[in-house]
Image 1 (cartoon, rainbow, N blue to C red):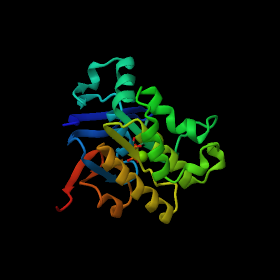
Image 2 (image 1 turned 90 degrees about the horizontal axis):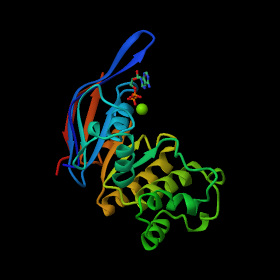
Image 3 (image 1 turned 120 degrees about the vertical axis):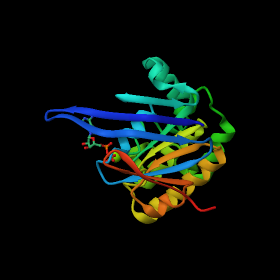
Length: 225
Ligand code: ADP
Ligand code: MG
């Protein structure tokens, strides 16, 4: 298993007292498997992704990513695990504004020590970014920015891609096109995917759909073979 969550709970401290956001989450994700995470706004989807990325700590339970228990790692160890194993794609794209498209595309692969010019060139072509390499993020449309963000993530060949509503800021047609590209590239890379989405249609394209309700998994459905 690439990712295992065992009885994971998380609450936030708020002015009104503790707010329990995740309760008793058990979840495992095989290498190469894709899982959609659905649920109403506020049901804990982004929190779950942050925990798997090691960006925040559970109050209870264990999270194991690529054989390493995140709770046993210090900040440096978690950052190293993220660099080596995990790629993230965000709703807000999060490109580096001061870098060109070409430099954004290479950024994570270089950080991970896995820059591969041939793979980067192949990704650039597949994502239709050849004519945009010298531009800066602010000179791109939303769909173009998200294609760069996907290329940047996959250039590093992460074992695990975490995506939080990656098409949430795109119109439906653009979002569908970007998603189709992302799913085929994730499959080619052999990465696992854990993706938050509001779209039942998109969720239906992944291997499994997990639905969160009030911080608990209330439905887990495999895609029919
Ligand atoms: P989702 O992504 O499903 O919309 P989130 O995981 O972002 O849900 O948030 C779940 C709940 O936790 C929400 O009620 C949200 O307001 C609250 N929450 C999220 N992050 C924090 C935080 N850092 N501090 C306090 N409350 C938070
Ligand atoms: Mg969210």
